Length: 174
Image (cartoon, rainbow, N blue to C red; front, top):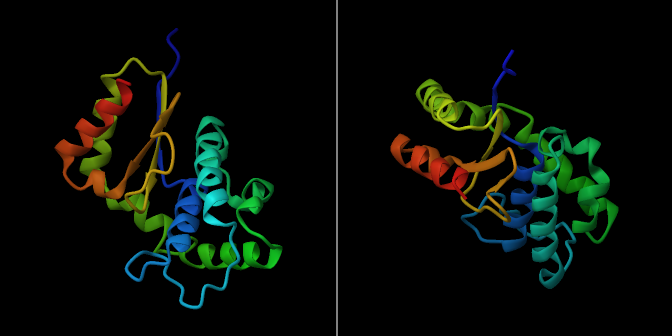
């Protein structure tokens, strides 16, 4: 009997949190989250950028990490911050957005039924037994876009169905 093929599409807590921290560090007014007054004490840029990339790749390469709530992975993300208060405050702010209809749920519903149908059809055309697609709220992919059975795609890349299919096909063929 042939094993069941499984496609999962979700907005990863972990990868979106890393993107959230990255965007906060940029402190650009038109980049979410922009929080005036810089209340969180992050590592300096020379440490932060490589650390974000390393954590991104490690998170994506561990099959359970991208799907686990950050509360179960705090030790992994704590080194991004210089102090515990900054880390907990950032986490609380992230979850105040992520944990309601404006965050994770909105991202997961963004691509709609047609998008999910296209992803499933594309998955059926691959030789993969399993594929987990992680949706990001913004256009920055901080590390690898695919590792093993884990693939990352941004919401912008899902807006035009043909482009979404081409992007995924290109990433899967690497």
